[in-house]
Image 1 (tube, rainbow, N blue to C red):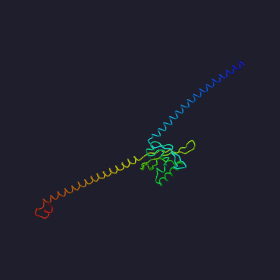
Image 2 (image 1 turned 90 degrees about the vertical axis):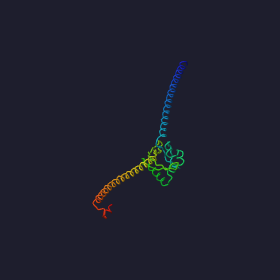
Image 3 (image 1 turned 30 degrees about the vertical axis):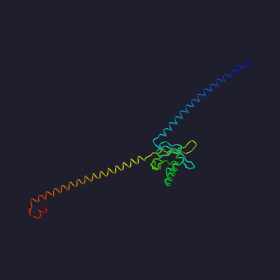
Length: 228
């Protein structure tokens, strides 16, 4: 009996040692998992910060069957600056409905987005949107089709506000037009100066000949009076 008890005691002690080792191993694994989870969280936070603070508008959306038919899941700060709407606004009011209030343009936009979902990506296409303040704003839109793990198709869109570029281009064209006008006036001035110079030379020659004629004519003649 004593021998059996000793064997049983040794077995229990060995099991306890094994159990403690398993617990230690589990604690190590849990610690590693927490470190990985923290790293992933920091990476996701950093990625989200990059997207949020990007200099261009970045958004991700997918199609839904009910109004407003498109749901946005990513909408960075620049998108709000460009449009004047938050992601909550856009999902409540609808992208097509408020960005393209003109029915014809709205239909065109929906048709274009439908083709894009089948691989016909937008590549720096210019569209005019209506912002929250009612102003029309030209933007360049580029898109890529993404697929999530559940098979859902998502659209990544990058939008660039080119309103300032358009204004700068219009000013440049106007300045070039004004410069061309000034150059034309300068050319006309040079031409007029040349003509006046040539005319003056002819006039001087005529006057010189008239002076010579006066020297040859008698003051009592009609010709002298006419020339004088």
